[in-house]
Length: 245
Length: 325
Ligand SMILES: Cc1cc2nc3c(=O)[nH]c(=O)nc-3n(C[C@H](O)[C@H](O)[C@H](O)COP(=O)(O)OP(=O)(O)OC[C@H]3O[C@@H](n4cnc5c(N)ncnc54)[C@H](O)[C@@H]3O)c2cc1C
Image (tube, rainbow over all chains, first blue to last red):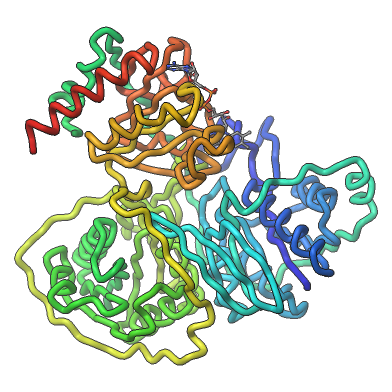
């Protein structure tokens, strides 16, 4: 069983988002970076699968050298080896092309990604990869078991759940509920220092989009307070003032 | 040239998010002097499909194939991409639902099209093709320029208006040219909570946090939701403790929602929670702590004990419902 897990390096969830250079760049000053939480679930599930049956888990990141702490963390959690494609990951299509180019030569049985990255919220890489590699892709997967080359999965659908099966190879994107994230232990952290982290230069794929600028949502006006003794007034205000119910 | 829109259906019916997508595509078509072609996949009745014209479709393509009754991402994507190529599509619009998200990137890769999801604006074509999307789960917006000839847009539900008119359009039934090799995933079972409003599509959401003390108190949330015709949601710790299903967890690591009204009960308003709900049009915070951060993000606030104020609010909501029944 050969599994590839896509790791994206994102600002910590407590980050106060601000921008610089006339709102054209995300302000990274003082920002802590983490493995995208959904990718962490994908990685943990991949490890659980290879612990049940034999196999390897390769972590791949498209990113610049500053992403390496997150990649090392993936190795500390338990990935067998890691690959960094040395490019700025600003366009999901470009990222998927880089990962697909690497994966083509390696014959992975299963590729796992996060459901979306918590910074750009694209949610596109799994589907793009599936198409580029001619693999099926299943998104927002909340359970996955592999047996005899067949994946049995559960995924979120609008208003419910779907149970489905698919033969490998396959791309699946991890949704919360898939498993609990694993915290690296001391042995893992030590081992990660010497595990292979290969740096590969990107192929010549072109970017399909570019972020021109950022903006913040309009600030909320004052919060109108209602006395708790008259809590029922809320319904009246929502009906007659906000006209929303 | 044309603008293609995926007319997503469930059990032969179109959802509100589908009609929004059709209306959005029609607006883009109007602004670019092209036609809006709606593509319905999976045995939707012609009488039903014809409704899409009322929301702006100039032409309706209906793909009928028994194998497409259930959703299969790779097959749906191929069918949609085939029609897009035949129609010389410049823009392909889908709603950013779970199914929409599953096919949009596959369609994009087939057509070598740039893709933006979480779209919240119409394209600005005055200088390139600029589109606005939410980033950081709603903490900010990004303006993105797509540089490829074809573009795929996954638009955020509950963001764009629909206008009904008297338009009619021809329905063309086509065979999408699919083969067995396009059906690799197999649906085994679908379970949908009946009678419940899916959180992702809800216009009103009532949400509970750790302040409610335990799952046995969720009647306060459910009764208000029922009286308002709302969906229910919760904060992360509440689903982590299994008081509520994971599918109700909203926030940066849960679902991002954008209802017209979000009522937060006993939720502190942590930055990760606000990220997923702050795009809601009107926000109500109910919390016994006057310093709770949620009040800074809310339009209406009540500082009080949920167990005392909620019964009053439920009562008033029921009265309003009875008046309008
Ligand atoms: C990586 C990461 C990701 C995260 N992602 C998310 C996410 O996606 N979504 C999310 O929600 N959280 C997320 N969190 C957790 C977040 O930081 C908060 O811990 C969480 O939102 C708090 O939930 P809560 O408001 O229900 O509970 P608490 O913080 O415990 O707040 C309970 C609130 O209830 C009030 N209260 C208590 N009793 C009553 C009463 N009787 N009547 C009225 N009010 C009362 C209290 O004053 C308090 O404000 C994340 C955290 C991390 C580290």
